[in-house]
Length: 109
Image (cartoon, rainbow, N blue to C red; front, side, top):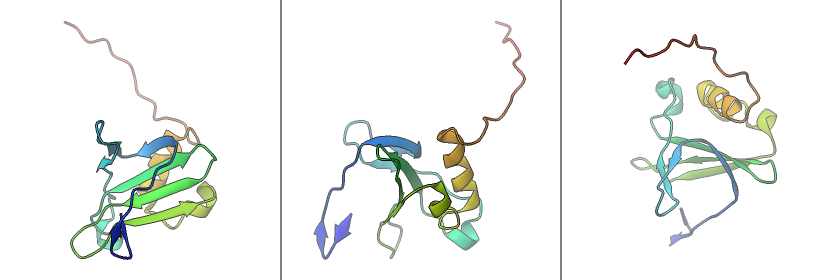
């Protein structure tokens, strides 16, 4: 990220709930786009649950907008600050929602 014209590197320990990191550099590589891009924009969303339980939401830079980082105390505090589909995916990844159920069918080879 860039702050006051200087590039900075922020680090934390935790679990990546939404998005993928570059395996060599540990930098955000591919986030999740919201289904409601008209309201929320087209940027990639990343959600990290820090080891202390706080949630970190990162949005990559797009066009004229700089990258954005927000920290929330918990899921209740994050709700409404992120798109509903991003929130639900993060809640599922954190185990707060039951996983989707699928019927298992053997693959005939």
